[in-house]
Image (cartoon, rainbow, N blue to C red; front, side):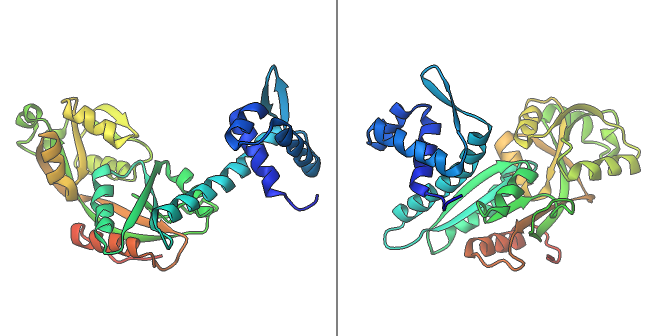
Length: 304
């Protein structure tokens, strides 16, 4: 196969996104004949037909979807570069592309990230939220600078990366004032039989909570299980059950939701990590996040 022609690849990408040569020609300000001819040359170059014609539309076939996946990553990164340069006249913008694992409480993510915005050098934070394995795939192709997670780098993932412990803190338990009147006295054994909102399977704190309940001989009534921490908080705010959250954000949780802290324990520790492709963190914004963790969390020793 001859060397890839990126201009032809761009025409293919535009047609695939638009669904037809005519629409792509309008967006690219080129004639339909020009794009059609270049698309034919590109298919001859790669050695595959990439579209099936369905009525007036062009739909990607299996080979076309594979090529489009690569093209989409290539040109999306190019658009991000153009945007970064446009927002920083005369130089590259200081940008932090951070993935936040969806098991990490939003308030913890903000507590860590907002410090980076106070740097003397202007910074632009681009946040992506999702499952840890999906974020690790983005990190592997350098579409993210770091990931903030509630667990270290998984051992069974084929991604070269390093985890850095940012900090850890106790776990507090919260409820609406009405529930707190019933279950605050006698904590933690008052939780036996109490309605409880449990984090989902992806949350690293879940097995720690279960072990603590078993050790204390506490059997709460599980009123719900939630992968999304924000949804869990919404149900907690509605009085559906008692829930746990990091003690480091206890004041924010009380203030935002008007709920009551009924107790806390140091036997269930929540940990937070920065995962990167670097053994040693060097990005100034990431170093600021490390500093924020030291100020706001009880920090243990970092390791790679």
